[in-house]
Image 1 (cartoon, rainbow, N blue to C red):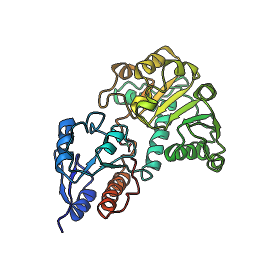
Image 2 (image 1 turned 90 degrees about the horizontal axis):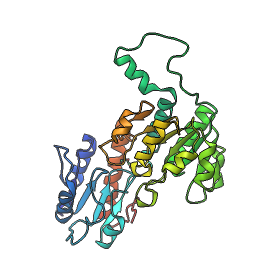
Image 3 (image 1 turned 60 degrees about the vertical axis):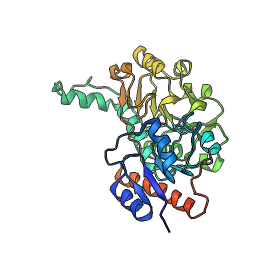
Length: 323
Ligand code: DGY
């Protein structure tokens, strides 16, 4: 029996590429260059499965007048706001993602950003590396304490819950939650979290805000100038979700004028371009979308994507079908 023809749009961890090559007739991307919209369309027309990532433009228009050979688009990553899910469905293409395997890793990075922004770790490192450190003094690099402060979590899925556990059990932080749907009281009780109805209620009560909601049109600029103004002037915003959730121009303004104290960002509106104003903000910690970037997790994500296409070609509904 001929093996399904499968394309990996980017370079994947070697262990996963090897596993893929055993199972399928695989085409790799050793140069690791993004394919672009035209390349993705060509891939969908010429392969049985396309294994994509967040850097692939599969948004509205991708499926217009497409004659797809592919019947499955397996995303390597949990977020899929870069994929026109409805368009894929209309074109008869199943879309899958890779949830669960990156929960801890992403929550670890959110906590890292929270701590770095609170304790001015990026600034301190820049000072040392620039040879500008003149020695210990009582007023040097004063940050803000984390222990016992209130954390507001927006979006309380698996990553949000993992963040709550770290903050609550590691740092004694009371947790407030805002989420579109009612969270199971058992889940809230695990970290003593309290769900509030609106962002307007949540934001003024928190010392830290961490975003864990999906991206896409529905949450575009959820955090805008008006909502930043509701945060405490001492508060810090952390975003490991999706860049579009925050209005970056409004955030730059808020960081520069003291509307909020700081931010820790792993995701950006126009990746890999970062708003020039953010680069000027010493009170922003900026990381290059590395929430899931551990060896273990990146292999786990790949294996999960392979499992999804294996299930699909075995005639089973993939565990992580999203459309
Ligand atoms: C994810 O899994 O969503 C990461 O952000 C990479 O896409």
